[in-house]
Image 1 (tube, rainbow, N blue to C red):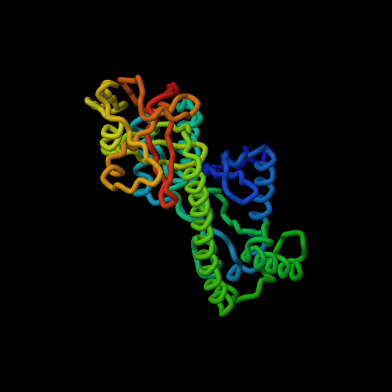
Image 2 (image 1 turned 90 degrees about the horizontal axis):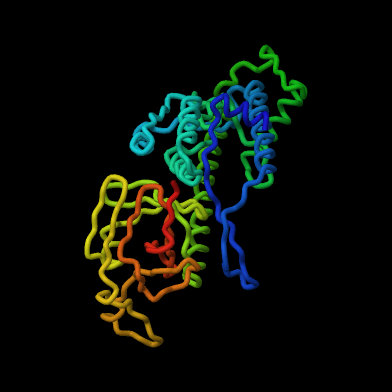
Length: 372
């Protein structure tokens, strides 16, 4: 706790990313999922890992200033941050600053103080993660940008996971070489550092390896994301579900919602929604959208697919709206509800189904609650 507070006071950032944890049956098929829980013990281990990585980075870069394998993180591009700036200014009248990690940290602290509901701030953290640059490995002799922006560390590397990352193995070897030369007290006498170490043949080779490491890291991130989406599609194709979500923004074309259980931001088209939920009147303002539904007796009933049916025209006329009760039970597309108002920061339910090639998000026009 003390080390994390000191780190955040120095400008280190903690941006949230949610990971789904799946429950599987005996055949390996997904039957449910939850957001992977982060406990206090996880944060404690994280702090010691960060301290270890930072300490090793400082030592090996002092011993081998032109040959060390470190990890840097560049500041986000201002153009990428424009959407977040508009969001904070529009809904909370807060100016976000991106000049330094400390400025970002204090901006986030002000925003968290103003936002009354933790789910909305969590959504902002997820949005903030998406605008950040990707951290990368580099050789110190081939780069002048060493700083890790998100952590606000001058020097940082990966040392703590050699069982799953090859860059950590190289860092272990460099640390062992530095200890053999300079001792294990972590202090390097700079007069002992060999001259001409700023750039040589090994530096070029290490730089090529770093390029490969960065490519593999990006590929593994995509693979993890695709794996999660694959399991979600499989799950929702077998068991369509209604998930809690929060309205976090209105754009010119879309309603933006955040799903805490998956960490996803989804865009819903109100024009499509007004057709699906059979509106006779639709109004929108800066902070809300209102749907007046067709009276119950005049609504078309959603088409129910019968076994063996192959009539394409009937299939295309099927209504894709789903109306659920509070327990998630399908009410056959009918509801006594005649008026629906969706406001910024409301909590609504999304009905998720899948054809195993794409996820589809649907409005659920019941069980709407206010978050403030």
